[in-house]
Image 1 (cartoon, rainbow, N blue to C red):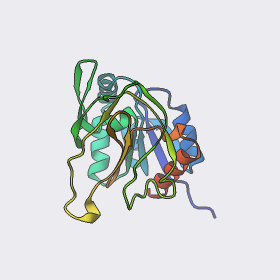
Image 2 (cartoon, one colour):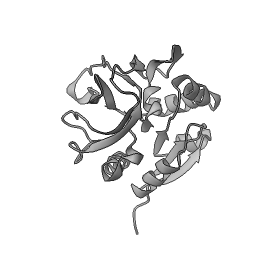
Image 3 (cartoon, one colour):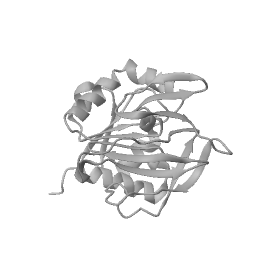
Image 4 (spheres, rainbow, N blue to C red):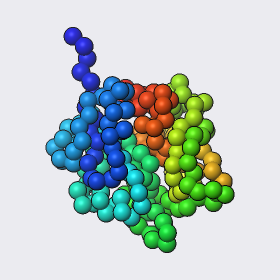
Length: 212
């Protein structure tokens, strides 16, 4: 008998076109359901949090389905969550976009703001600076990933009590260094789009799925 495929829920809260994410997760080895049903979210092996658009609008949509509570419950129980693009940004304390400040989920300290870059949005393929010991980027440390964003978190202040608990932060650059990905216990997030990053993105999703 073949092993059961891990079950991943893509959180349905009205943010963007999630078809490519669902297809990529399926190709990477997961059974995927698009839903905001609390029981399904709680039972899934992994929760995928997409996010496209303005920070404050994404937060309003997320709160409308009580997504903050769903994410908090999973993380409190050590259950894996993966945030993508604005789904990565909302894990920080707040976002400032076009003069509007919105509170985020506060899983990590810090503010998401507009990059000081000569050209925005930062759109296209870029390399990333991966820390030693990354499981998310295993075998793809030197690959390019697809970014499309104008805002990002640019500072990281959390240090683990031990080497084993130290969050792993991956960086990239567009005018200034910014956080491209974080691996922090059950919570993982990427500023880039793995579902639009070709074979490297699929391998990243496989790495995440294999940890579920």
